[in-house]
Image 1 (cartoon, rainbow over the protein chains, first blue to last red):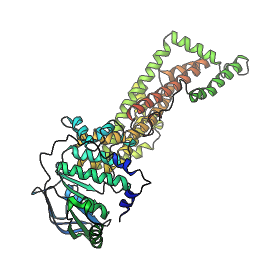
Image 2 (cartoon, chains in turn green, blue; image 1 turned 90 degrees about the vertical axis):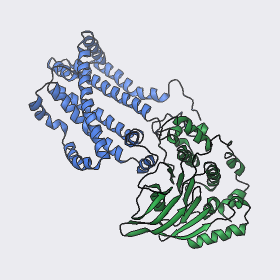
Image 3 (cartoon, rainbow over the protein chains, first blue to last red; image 1 turned 180 degrees about the vertical axis):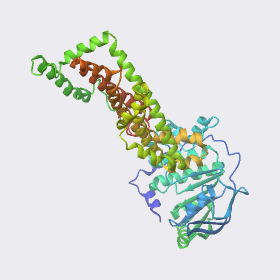
Image 4 (cartoon, rainbow over the protein chains, first blue to last red; image 1 turned 120 degrees about the vertical axis):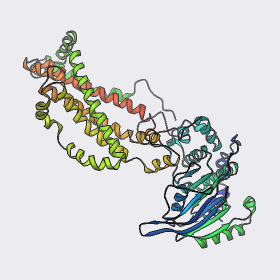
Length: 269
Length: 265
């Protein structure tokens, strides 16, 4: 089916070894006090000069939902995410989180970027606890424990691998107990095995923390693996809004069912 | 992973072979009369001059005066250059208003304004400190400005998304990011600092190492002149070593400054 599945089946790769690092002990992180928040886009449009990137987009994301947006590069995915993050303002329409229109960066929202964007001059724990605040060290250590990197707290980021760097970035995003987590192709630069580890880690943390997640990707297999719902963007508008059935039993879904889903998404991209 | 560190790395020894050989050769040549003492006195004569000036206290006094001038100039010029570099790097209106003027002033060789400085300040302390300040200002300004401007905008954006206000943003992102470049500026500035001071003290001074050597020239004390030159070399080296030490401490995260034993994982 996908290259990922082939890699997993390849006996020459030390897959079990690679994946065993995932089996970190279930963490003691207390369940989030607030769950995910709803995101609403009404008539959102964004133009850069004469170029319309998004045109009149309507979208409702339910609290705690995991939505994946698939699209070609330059299709407006990142623009959409930046609008939801409050990094950019829409040319028209409004973005609301938890029913309130936003006009800038939100404390309840965190973003993971394609590159980890760790500060090279801060240790791993210094990066995770970037915003400091009360008892930041213990909270940062807790988040590092959740991604299985508590033992690397005092290392410099440069000695970490690409996957580890993204796990640190994930820990940094979780430290503030976000209600909305936006992920801008965070696994795009990782190798297939590390990517599968990251999928499992992200899914576990999402179930634990119950934040609303919006993930951008151009990998259809990744979209089906993670999303409750897959959207595709084409020419600045939503071309497909596809709920993924049997979300929890996805692993038992048959190959043909998965292939059918993939085909539908690819046709709409 | 851990490289063994021998007590005395061979590189350190090798670096000293040439200078030691030169000094020994020079001593032999001077003692045998091959080089006239008026042209180049023997190292032992320079050592004697050192001992004499040390004992009568004039050496320490002159070195102290020179170092104080250098430090004052570095402090004034350096902090001005740093502040201008930060302001112009971060704030577009300041950059528009100041940068092109600074770039213009930078191209004037600062030693060319010595006659003007003497007219303004006479030959007192102010003249020398002013000259050193001007000399140090520009390399530190340019490198601070460059350091701030070349910070990865992605890191700044990330820090803002994660809720950092202007001050934490400056202390945790902008300043550390600009620091490697600021250190480059500081090292350039230190070189210019000593150069400027030598010239200023040679032209007009009543104390300091430059004065000591010019005074010795009048009495044909070539050994003291040579001693002065060596002291300048040592002071220059000392400030360079101090900066390297600071760099190592402040930039431990930077791959270029980390010790080889701190190997990559």
